[in-house]
Length: 158
Image (cartoon, rainbow, N blue to C red; front, side, top):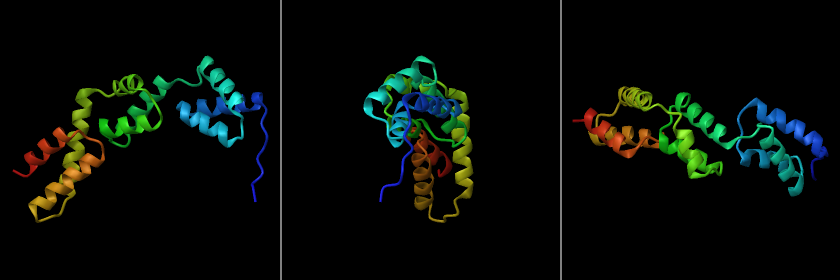
């Protein structure tokens, strides 16, 4: 049993997607997916996306910068995880690099130090090898560069 879909005209869909993009930055992939969910045909999807780009509702570089800032400042992700997230949105390497420029190097290192120290203090493991593994795995999972992670693990457990 199919659930009933409202049928949107191209103009209605444009207005709806303008609000969708104005609410928060979106990637082209998110917008295409939303339009597919709305039952729009490929020709209409292309027309609407061109309209959104032309009227500055949709901008991949702006999305990448916003995404990188947010994931770093709010979720405390490292560059690797942010890069993977941007790749999943189908962004080019050039756009990904532009997004990563939003992260200040000094702030990046301060956040890394704080995240590492917080986790280090939270680990209640007597076995030093297991403790090292827990810290390293946690930091790597959060997308921090392996060279930073292993240097920090050695610093704490030497």
